[in-house]
Length: 109
Image (cartoon, rainbow, N blue to C red; front, side, top):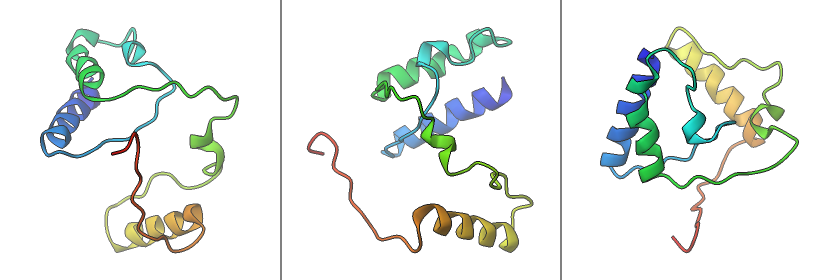
């Protein structure tokens, strides 16, 4: 529950700063942390998601979040130059090389 509470405060701070958050989940907001210990403490975060984010169901037999990461390193510790370099290499591999700046317009915004 501690992680869930931290995430809730993080999202609130991001929203307050005007940050647009794009995320994925394999569950609808009302099912997040379902049957979790002290779930009632997590309910304000679920409400925040429902109030401040648009939720879209993307139906596909493939979980694309895992598609390119299979067998790859997903945790980089300890924080430092070596971890940063490993993350940069992973990003370059996932992005197919060096990225370019892109403005993504959604719903004419």
